[in-house]
Image (cartoon, rainbow, N blue to C red):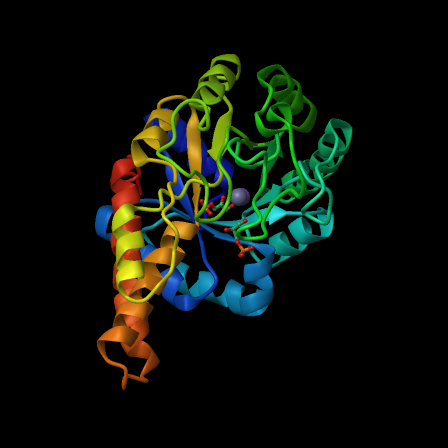
Length: 328
Ligand code: G3H
Ligand code: 13P
Ligand code: NA
Ligand code: ZN
């Protein structure tokens, strides 16, 4: 059944668990996530970026969500727009059956230039007003996502703000968070505390200097009833890096967000945990393995099946670690 983000995260807060929000672009990812959820009785957040919407097409995505909802009637499914850049992106998502949207007003519409606070409040508030008229939920973002280690630089995958950013911009200010939630009435708040998108988050196992979990604790103590969202939450497991590299891949050694840090966040109000990179890596490591294992193979299903198996296993691990399992 379809559910809004607000409904799902209210339940998660009441029962003290977190929900991974997995990005989807195609049928295989959708099936892998739902198979994992079905195996452990977990509610699901599927999210599509603007890139996913143009890759698959809005009609195909909408029909895929219809199909997954029909195939797994017992699993609550929230369909969410990831990183909406303006009103049009958010409202057209709702028209296509999304029950939730992120209005990311931390950046201007180009999704690169950091925006000022007043711009963020105004555009987020407009989207909240419109979305709430039709019963959809809204996630806002305060603070610019980006690596504390690299001054915000995310050159590796081309996502996020451009140029050098200060520590101030890269860490959500707790006092401003209180004001932002009151001014916008968002259903969930994404915060910045040192994570970035993509595989290259940290050049060492992160400690409190580069992964500022204390910011989450501080915001949660001031806003105990607000659902917090962690972006850039892939863990980039060593085993997946090793498998990728053992099959001819060239991924420089990197560190993501340890699962136990996310679990700590969940104890302090984090309810939605965005994960894309880990699923991509789980799938493409299998593509490499199959290609290297049998250079004559050309049936796409022989690549996609093991890729789905690997993604299903990864999703299941996250449902179990975050306490989502058993809450469908
Ligand atoms: O925002 C980052 C997500 O990982 C989506 O990535 O825009 O390449 O689909 P994408
Ligand atoms: P990762 O790149 O760490 O998977 O983060 C995804 C994300 O935050 C999508 O909004
Ligand atoms: Na999002
Ligand atoms: Zn994100």
